[in-house]
Image (tube, rainbow, N blue to C red; front, top):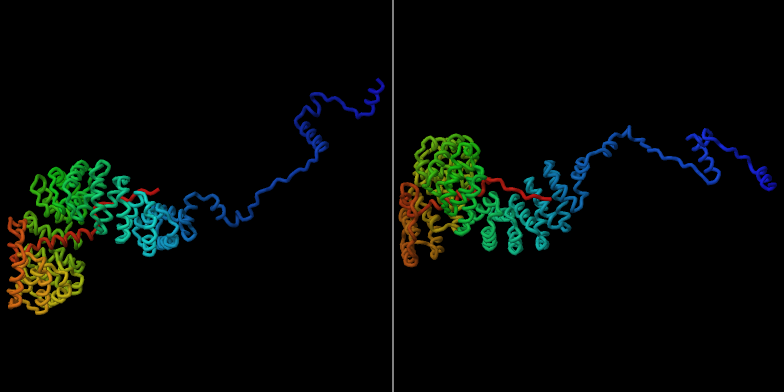
Length: 584
């Protein structure tokens, strides 16, 4: 007891607290805890950092940068392609074009950067950048040259989408690199089973648009189309049909399958697509009755006529003129298209105008529409200065076939030919001379210039062209000794290729010019013994007469005009929109 009392006396006095004391209140508990911590632990109170923004008010764009949307930050990268690597360059290039932010100066900078990074690009990045430039319709020569050199080593790693987009981009940019496309042709065949319908259509269309013919590749594409036609949409079917028609590939089984599936999809076609498809069918002389009936009824529909562009109008009428289809709906479609042509005659361009005039030479139904012919000739008089060499030659040819001896118009054409005579192909030179001669429009200066150009290009002339040229100069009695000598030399070089019909025309031309001497007579006699008779030419649309009989020259010069029409159609804008592939 004494020890306990002494302990209690020496220890500090601790008074019990009640529920209402210091420990009972919240503030008191906090103070007690703090005192206990300070007494029993080494406690140091830490300072809290404040956010220091001294420039927020003076430089407000810092705040805008922090609160910017992702699109703003992305555009900041878009406008600095020099700082981007391969992946970022491809991604921003695609987004820039897709969002409509592309301008020529910025695209040039992207092209320059892509050329610098060409060695580090992978197949996907090649295809994305090419597709973006194709969508923007912008060419960068250095980039295209670099890609052409850098892509071939990576072709084994290309997938179908990469092949399709690369081919489509080169076609849209009109970059004809035959070496690169031969490498494509060598790499694609064993991967064609993996191509879907859109890829097949884009590849075939690219080869046709660039006129790069590869029969083995197109045979493989035809096999894939025959194996799985149900995978091709109406656009893919149209692209495949147009590509095969461009190269005049007339595989019967392929066109039968294409026609059946095109008929199945005929309701999905626009007016421009129908014109393109008719042109393809006429090029290979495919006469699928059900498909032609559906297409002609579709063209005759008033709503389709209002949607039909002038370019497609000339294409459709030329196709119907070439097909000469007497089935149900053919005459109605021609009548409807002729009425539409009269309405838009004032808006026609030079190639479309010459296409329509050429169609009038073949269709009796159009030849009798005097109002249409007058409207076309009136428009032609204002378009002569804008015509190129092919359009001028076809204009003269059409006037000659239609017996339209419009001297003021032909005088304008003769003046327009003079500065462009070097642009004329051998075919165009021959039918221009033939047309003026048939209309008996004599222009010494024009024929002198034509003779000089014909002599220069004589090695490119066929027997038909030589015969047409001699006959034209003989009809107008315009003698040119240098031209006659050049024709004799060309006839000798063509001795293994001439037909009997061409020999008859050439002999008649020499006789009309009084140029049949002993040497020429011996040459023609020797050639006659070597050649076989040519098959009879098919009847033309003019009442069943043959073109050779109607012309009197012994030559079917409609084939020459048709080839020029085909070239005009290929150089003009396409009537169907070509779908661009989806990129990630």
